[in-house]
Image (cartoon, rainbow, N blue to C red; front, side, top):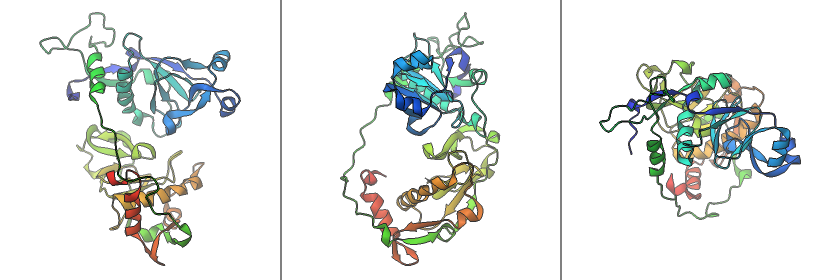
Length: 358
């Protein structure tokens, strides 16, 4: 099934969803009242899940929960991140629950909306929080129901749109059902990779590993035109840093070459992480981009894994930029004292389970 997004129409979130504000839940409460019910907060890691709590306790405390499938949206921190909770959940005060009307709420339609709503996450970067009123007024583009002659069906009650358009629920459901996939297989068995003896590794400064270190070129994401030509990469360690997809129109000056390692220099909860980018992209100025002739998908995955071990040093707003970045020392396998063993790193990644599928 094809997505003809040019024919989609805008709908207010308030016309589609009911939104429920979360209330405070602490990790201590979860530890003291453990159960089987999922508790969600604002983080993107683990789909926002911070633990499992006793549902009866949540009811006694008057917490915000749904026992039916639902979406959640992060209020702060990873503001705008949307998760799908198929078995329902309880949300803390840094998240909200989004519910579809019972007559259209299916697993497939929730999954469709999770992707569509996530495309709006860029609106809540740079400290902007998700408020109930602001989020309900957001616009999302959706496929619309059509008449037999392919003209838009118009609802005289204007239930979903001030223009009378009606979302095409059947298309959404059938599109998700059409996304069949084969299970990913690997010929590499667990334990096949050689053991790593880090005691014999050498130390290298970041400034010596890369032939070129530059910044991303985009200082203001709001200036980017939405589209499907190129990804905008920001201070985000999930989804390989992808914040949104953009049009190349009027954005050419922001484009950076791929086959590089992006090190996140600034960003709440993300500074200190590194990601490999194989294609051209638009990068935020919070990214430090490292280029070198040794970089390929395998060596880059090895090195980014090592670089991400630096993350713990950059809590609480500490930046990973300037001399602090350039003088950072990491350890790598070596052929001799000052020469990294790139062949070993490449073959090591290839030998891991699923390394043969990269």
